[in-house]
Image (cartoon, rainbow, N blue to C red; front, side, top):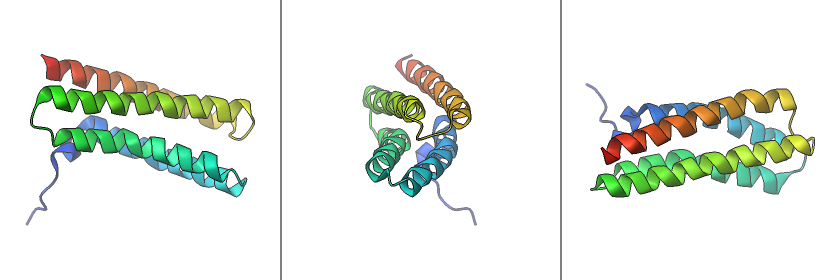
Length: 121
């Protein structure tokens, strides 16, 4: 017997965001180890916002409303990218960790934008 899924679980943009979230949560754990608790919490919150907005928007009754939530998700991608760049500049995160994460976030942003454009027809 198959388990019923939520609509958002079918979307590649949600699955990819969930994958990068695991990496970002691990990075946040490392910040806590450095006693950067506020930064860790902010990173977790912004990271959660990426997938949360995709999930919440998928429950919308209109494509326009869904696109609004996707836009918020995309904005959270930019927020996370900004934090990674600043944390790296401050030496809180190793530069070699940031590059691959930024690549994944850039791809997430592009995929989300393409998905939004598809919704708008």
